Amino acid sequence: MSKKRVKYVLFLLLLPFFLLSGCTNETQRANHQDTWQRIERRHKVIIGLDDSFVPMGFRKKNGQLVGYDVDLARAVFKQYGIKAEFQTIDWSMKETELKNGTIDLLWNGYSVTPQRAKKVAFSRVYLKNAQVLVTKKKAGIKNFNDMKGKTLGTQSGSTGQQALEDKPHLLLDKIAKKKPVLYDTYPDAFIDLNAGRIQGILMDKVYAEYYIKHMAKPDEYSIYSNPQMPADLFAVGMRKGDKTLRRKINAGLGRLQRDGQLAKINEKWFGVKSSYLGPAN
Image (tube, rainbow, N blue to C red):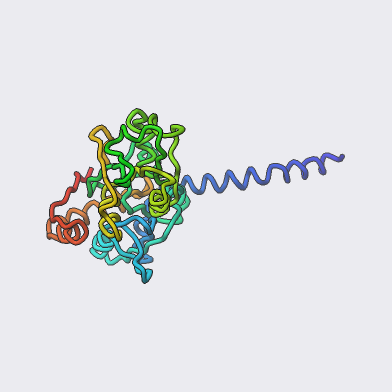
């Protein structure tokens, strides 16, 4: 084979590597860019969400998207003349969607964790939450210890899944096979809970209380907490380069608290005017 031919073959073999390397570098640059001016020019910010996460962001029977985070995001960006547009994503791939630029923000009951902080930047915390165990009353389960040998479900990529891994002695080490059944959405987990295929669901308290309250027979369910479970705080997730976007969101949340709009949104979705807004670091 001639030298020219060898070089050509090597070029073909290495071409995918060069293309992939170029894409990777482009993605890395995008993650460190401040995109506020681009958002201002298009008058639109794209927010990724799981549209089955009640009451934070979910679809009514007519398909309309509603929820606490939907109202909050729209109220924040209205201050800047920017439309909040929501895009349904696979929640287990949320950070990848953000990194790839498919979306600008994660605003959907997104909990602050050390693991996520390595990948994204967080806004100030705007809501306190907790992870709870949901069971059917007829199962006779009264606490986390009663899940010994039982089957547990949780959402893939959720804070519940992370909490199981972070504090395995509280629940993970007790359940059957020491492994939860993972679901794409919590409504899928409730289907299996009602059918007896699983005996418990580890999930967000705000979700559990709202979802069960609106079920046909809410009295059939029990909700248990454990004070040893890690604290669960909601914030907005964004790329680390979006420093201006972060400042705008933090300032917008602060104004909503001062003018009373945050209290109204809290009362609408949770029945209480009290709110928690962490410092704008």
